[in-house]
Image (cartoon, one colour):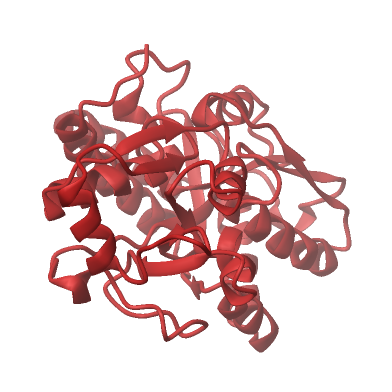
Length: 324
C-alpha cells in the first residue's frame, strides 16, 4: 500500500507541475456545487456552508451545498469521483472519511488518492468525548474507573463503523484498557441526540457538531481528543491530561475535486481559500467552532492525505473494523 501511495503522489505531483491550457481567470463562470458526503448539521456541513458562502461572494457566482450522506461518506464521495473534472462539482470532506475508508472498506468504488485532486485544506478541529447531563461520571477518570469496574456496560455511539468517532472510542479502549460497547449510527447527530436522551452513555463528536450543546449544558464534555485544550472551551481537559500522553487526534477538513482537474483551476481555488482563511472574519467564525484554519497548497494536501491513509490503516487494522 505504501508503494502505491508513493506512486500516486508522484503522478499527482507531475500533473500539478503541468501547464494547463485552461484559463483559470475565467473560473468560475457558473454555479459551483460543494458536495458534503455527511448529513446536515455535522462538522463537515458546517465548514462547507461557511467556506461556500465566502467563496460565492468572492467569485460573484452561486455556490450551493448538496448533502449526499450514506455508507460512511462513500455515497457522496463516489458521486464526486465520477463527476466531470471541471471545477464545478467539488467535495468537502474530512480526514475520517477520505483517509479511513480506504482501509475500512474491502471494496470501494473509488480510490481516495488516485481518483481525486486534493485542492486545499480548510481547518483542523478535534473531537469531544461527551456524556449525558445526568451521567454519573463528572470527568474522564471517573468514566474510565466505572468502565473498568463494569466491562461492556457503558455504550458509546458513533457516526458509523470505521468513522473517526468509532475509532476514537477504540483508541480510548486500548489506551485505558477498558471495554465499551459500540453503537453505530447513520450520522453523528443521531448519536448526539441519543446521548442527550439517555439512550446511550457517551459519544465522540466533532467540536462544530456539539459545542453549542456543551455550552448550553445539554451534554457534559469529559475530554477533548487533541493534545491541546480548546480556545473556545478551555475548561475541557485533554485526554492526554488523564495520563494518556500520546493521545492526540486533530482531524482536518478540506476540498477535493475529481481527478483530472486543471492544475490552474486547482491553484486558483486553493489561493482563494487560503486568502479567505486568513481574514479575521473566517478566523473568528472557525474559532467559534473550535477549529483552527489550515492553509495548504494542493501538493501539501496530497502528501498529507497519503500520510493519513497510512496512519489510519494501522488503527483500522488494530480495531478489527471492516465493511464488505
